[in-house]
Amino acid sequence: MPFLCKAVEIGKAIARTGNLMVGVPDYDNYVRHREAQHPGDTVMSLAEFHRNRVDRRYGGGTGPDRIMRCC
Image (tube, rainbow, N blue to C red; front, side, top):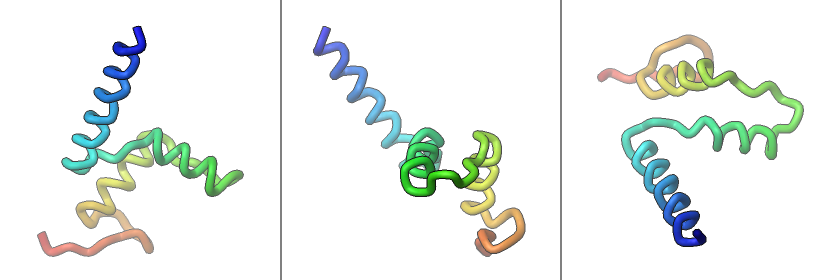
């Protein structure tokens, strides 16, 4: 059984790494960070988080987080 648990942990780590390599952000990691480093602040919903990451990556949206890119 311990081998199976370790294999599951390794599989999750590989999946996280793969997702980050192709630009898929980790919402659970974001929530843990916000709760630990910014207690009491509002945490974005999953939909808001993904919209924010897409806007930041591709230059969409408005406001101070907007990143301008030519392509």
